[in-house]
Image 1 (cartoon, rainbow, N blue to C red):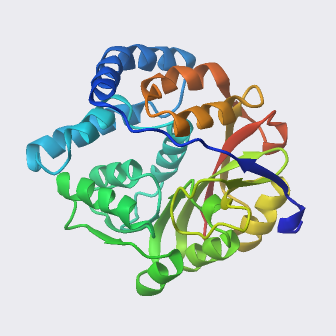
Image 2 (image 1 turned 60 degrees about the horizontal axis):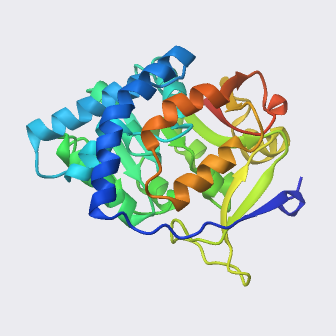
Length: 320
């Protein structure tokens, strides 16, 4: 299946005006009040990954104890009451369950995952030494602040470089994680190959990507990461949603079949896209509601082919 055979979607995201001081205070107060309620409802629904809410609280406590001035109050509030968004709850839970069997690991590479996961992993695995790479300098700067705030700077090396450069300088690694990343890379197959080549024999590679029963390539009228040039129509490559055939061609032909696979997706088509538009276009979006929202709208599926709409797939690979 060639890339130009994929169904295309063009996403129009209206600009979100910055929050006023009053809106910021209101959002924080509502989050403090309603976050525990939505967390409880999520638990009743059996939403995965809720333990990472407690991990985020631990991150805040360590920051306040060790280096209280490194993280701004807004960041601390976010980690306390809405540290993750949408399917990150599933992705973090999946990746963490895979890490339970990687106890012999010591060298760890994370490729541009949401920063909370590698930080929590390092806090819980005292002997690990990590390289964190992310070509988006501003985002990596925020990760660096969090790493310093919790006292992990002696065990972390951070680079704002593309994946191919980061893997040439370091490795091989016992463990590599990359959560919701390769779908945003135009040459995703090469990115997977670079990670696979940087893995030690017997090492583990953990990937998560968005998926659907039929593959889709999405373009956006906004340049969310500032790393790619827009086309003549003004749209920028945003991401792929992988189906069975695209996973086989762009991932499994490099790595072989995954050791572990789990699929989590929306019960009704369109729910995730609607939520994503709301989250991107409205800075007052109530992020604290997402455990409840996930519980109502998402479920586990046996296979990507069974998805009625969008989902996310977690995959763990073991290198021979």
